[in-house]
Image 1 (cartoon, one colour):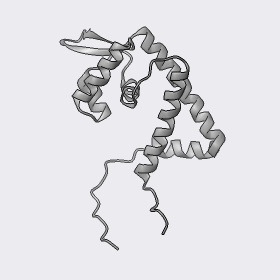
Image 2 (cartoon, rainbow, N blue to C red):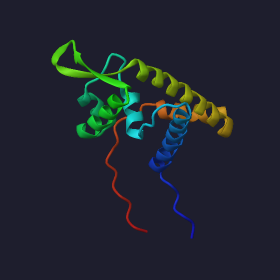
Image 3 (cartoon, rainbow, N blue to C red):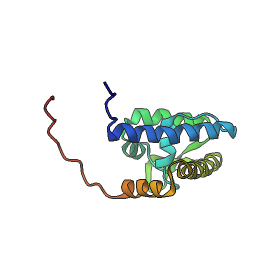
Image 4 (cartoon, rainbow, N blue to C red):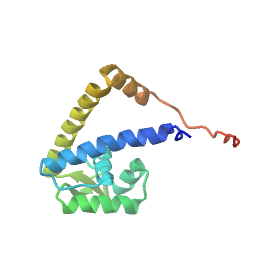
Length: 150
């Protein structure tokens, strides 16, 4: 019997892991302190001027506690800092330090090289088609009835 065909969410998760593993290995090879996948994602959704923990949690789709853990780990490593929000005195913004900005630029360069590697492996046209499909607006998901067992 053949193994079941992976569904699209599984394939997307595998593709994301491919990029994460390449990025993490490249950053470690460059002497940058190890970070977790959650910390990588936090960096990706952080605004240049800073973002509140609540907004980061919303963008990442995780609990605020999970976001706090990722933030505090990156503050401890010198990549992030907390500052007062000039627009709202009681709120704190999370933003990159100079070291965090340097690491972020390096990560963006690594991701660019990983895309080039993917183009070499599966072809420029395939990567362009993949990007086009993922950039299209998909709309809200609909509730689909489950298929009866076969």
